[in-house]
Length: 231
Image (cartoon, rainbow, N blue to C red; front, side, top):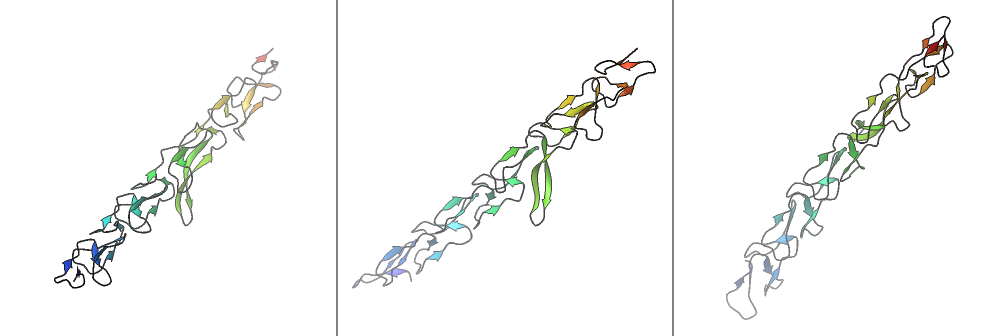
């Protein structure tokens, strides 16, 4: 009945909430951590489904959002980086690939355009370096993942870019593919690779920022730098 009585006493005393009779019903003792009891209970009941209780509790309380019970179901502990939890759940959930979450999060977040998770299970996003852009890829069995991918030949991007920009005619990417550089007079962009400037062949010329070299008219020859034709 949830009552106790010392040896030789009469009517038993009711154990309060959070306590139950000891083995010989002589005194009330606290329910251990992770359990509870109502008034006049004969046994403690374990907390379940994302709830916790300190020793001597009359009820279990749900963990606050972003946390789950510790191993003793005594208190809530923050979900680690890359995971989340709603209120009153038993375990943290991993963020889907491509999303991030700081410790104690209630939901996962997407990276901004031009950024990707620092690593699977990360708490923060990092910008793609110059010459790369952020794009999504499908990982079989896992889902969508964001990765930084090198710009295609003839294209450039600044740090933290969501896409690459093709160089205009007569321009080629620099070594880092961060910005476009102009082909000098007497040189043209290599249309096959789009990554380098090549000198005009004999008998032709080109102005700065050209994609092609132009033959000189009969009786003319290119000047020394092949920027124009002369008689």
